[in-house]
Length: 247
Image 1 (cartoon, one colour):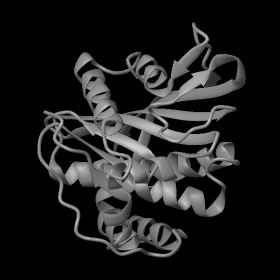
Image 2 (tube, one colour):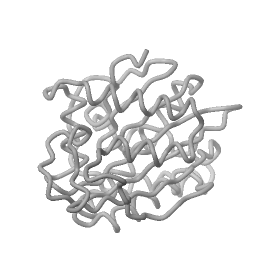
Image 3 (cartoon, helix red, strand yellow):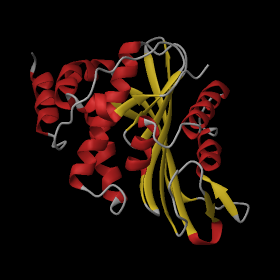
Image 4 (cartoon, one colour):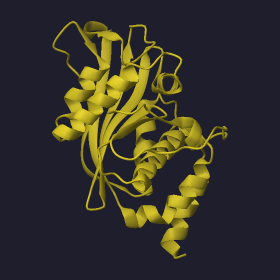
């Protein structure tokens, strides 16, 4: 193991992720799919390999858990996102492009989270990527309140009227993995039980959003792939849940 690999492994091992829960093994489907990953919804176009799907889901979960151990996800979102982004870059995600957070200005008196998500991501996504995101959002919306994926997303994405969540489209071409990531924060007077179903009042909601286009550096990530899997342990099976077949 060379020195750069040792440094990467040590950095992963030093992260504080909290206690480790227990659950069953995670198995990823091939082709178009999506998964709830803690407070993120990650969708994959066809062509993303099973290994790279796992790389995406593991690195996104690692970054969320590390950030949440240091900063309140909802009440200290600015610092949370700083550590979240730093961790992603540390394990091999390079930022190709990004926009800072800006306030969404709704055109009507009420709006929904899915509409703002799609409107943002379609600026940076292909038609196919946008379609997969929309399908994943609809699949999550349609789940029963007691479904594990629905419960996980609601518990992690918001705390009452404040929230912090992410939605991403991931594609792969010629072994290059690209993640187009929407980042969202909000504060509202509305009662939020199911985030994707609530209608936000425009005059009493602050909804901030920004985007990133990230590319996975395989040479960097391969050095820490096993260390990340070991660090996450059974957290991966608890905090990553595949959605039903997207069709």
